[in-house]
Image (tube, rainbow, N blue to C red; front, side, top):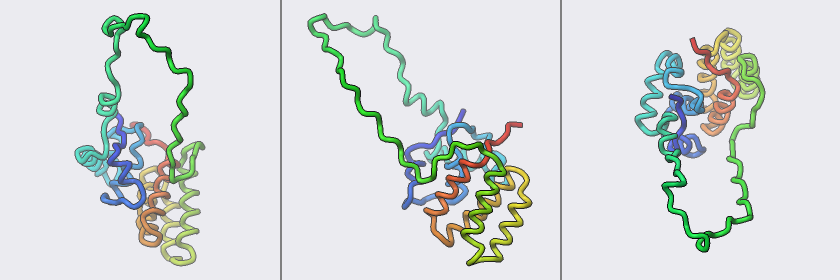
Length: 192
């Protein structure tokens, strides 16, 4: 069953509220309804599944089954529902309600192809912007790590280290927005 964020998780990811650590928040960002608990198993040196399960117990994540059982009601069959007499029937309203306003997203909308190359280029750009002038040694370390990151897990590990440093320098709001972008750029994990 696929994992979805709860209202508690969405509140946690909003700016200004922070009760979870970076690993838990990263996992919340990656829980987009397309991954199951088992998909998170290889993350965080094998601790991803345990973190996902803990987030489920604490009410930050729920399975699609849990979500659909709350959202879907059994259909009402016309024969089960009493029909009003013709004189009691009211005409259907003719005006259509306004469509709901689109949800505000802190990160840019991204509809391109997810790939390690795109993620790597984004991280190199962030490395240059955030570290090259103020922390050249750190920038060099991250550049080397990005060049050596050949798979999704290595790229994710490098990005986590960068996010931790960005949080120290620029605060958790900036770190969260970069985490959201990374989640949009990284390719989905391949099933073995």
